[in-house]
Length: 124
Image 1 (spheres, rainbow, N blue to C red):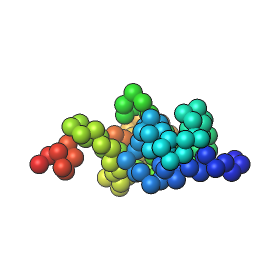
Image 2: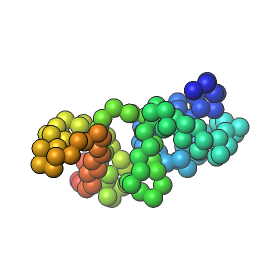
Image 3: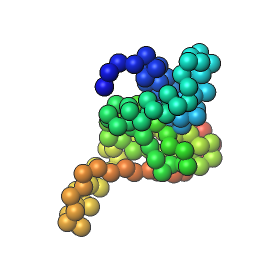
Image 4: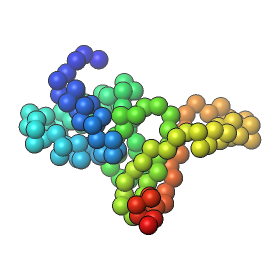
């Protein structure tokens, strides 16, 4: 993938905002400082970064996809009250892949786990 200033702006904004923003959230963050980055440019670059494995496109959490700069194996927790999305270490379910393969005979090549509930702040 060739270098692109717009792509770098998108990637840096995502890295600086680890709240798993949607494309619309990112556009709001970027457009005031970099009006030359259009929505089409943003969506194109998010797609290219995701396809290249540089960022992770998280689908299925909400209707709009969310984006995550952390591509290492980890899970997500969604607060049902405030809507924030948090990273959860994959260590919390280390045996889930082995147990799934053992019990089903499947070969798991990837997986995602999403926990839902109340975050620490909303629980209080």
